[in-house]
Image 1 (cartoon, rainbow, N blue to C red):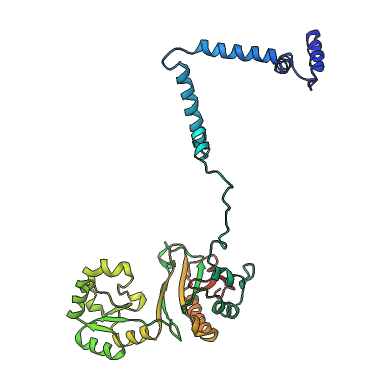
Image 2: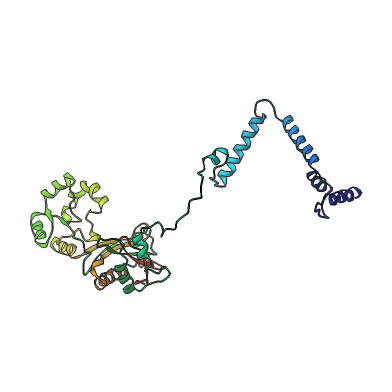
Length: 334
């Protein structure tokens, strides 16, 4: 106790703040650190001990110990996912001058986009009529852009009964000139031509496929002719042109199928992220025609609600032009 009292007194002379609960070892260390000459002596002793421990070569050499310490430091940084460069080379390699400014996503957009984006309140959920009217005003491009509907569903596309895929006839079409091709017997091909098909035939059509000429947007085929398209599946499949009964492009009545395709029959399906994307017309259509087309789509989507679904069917809905900002819309499907 007498020694501790002496050490506390000495620490007070050096103006050190010492806790009453400090041990003799803690007091000696604090006093040694406060006295420069004593601190130097301690450091020299540590260096001497380290030199005594190291060998001239091998695993215990000073160089080997330093390399092991560097390796341990790198492993610790890697485990902590720290990718910040260190060392004199990293400091020299850094660019001089002010740090680059990080711009927001909106600031990285073009001036026309930023201008129309000011019209949209991101915190507001618009009615369908308000959203469509706003979409016609927020087209940043000079072209007659498409108006798109994006619906995020609560389905699991991996489940067969929840993998939604169907067609809908839009009352006013999509505004695009749909090129329709028909692969059917000569008698049906003639009827398809009268109905408005751009390409129709049998052997002549296969010659075009052999050349790789796919000058059409929709391909319609009769059930009997589907096996003949098997060898062209690798060409047609990736482009979404392979006829499918679900999309109405495999039909016995090719005349009716051509008329529907030309009138504005479009296919939509849920993607891997459980989102449905569909163009419901052009900006030039005006709010009224876009409203009718959009309601036809939502009516079709409502009929596709899976009976096995327990949760919410539609999570969110948004409308936008091809290059315009997104507009949040009230869910139109329960």
